Length: 223
Image (cartoon, rainbow, N blue to C red):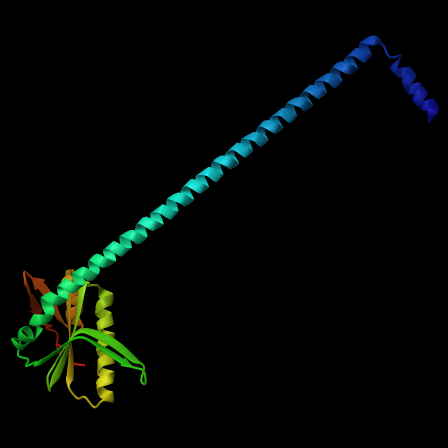
């Protein structure tokens, strides 16, 4: 082995100044390339840190914006809710006092009105309430009043009528139960839907209201 290495060294020849200088130059170039690589890596790390810092600032700013937006939405919901409740009170004060005379003009003979009738039958699990409850010895009119009438309000009133009917049966109340629904604002589709369900539809006109009678077969529906 030693002989082979000696022969290889002899083949390369003696180390001259030019070879040594070329070797140092090559080492210098490699060191310079390494240094540039390290500088680029350092700059990349700085860029990453700067981007991370910007991202964190954006996240913080967005979070503050989300919190502020949520606060404003909650405040708006409170104001809208208060305004809606106020409209509901106005609707009830417009409609309830004239219910008996208006329905009696359609052929009924109601002699009693209850405002805010509530049923809490814990024994049979029946819980419901009505904005107005008109009655006599033959029939009952259950009236629901909404500010903005929606389809789900009408469906809820159907369920309400079923509950009142169930409670009446438990107390041997043989009277017919009719339903009416009022809305300060409603579309034609909601009005049509309510009429198809067999409800009287009440709409405010000026300081009073009109009553539309359902015309489908078997209407108005009696529960």
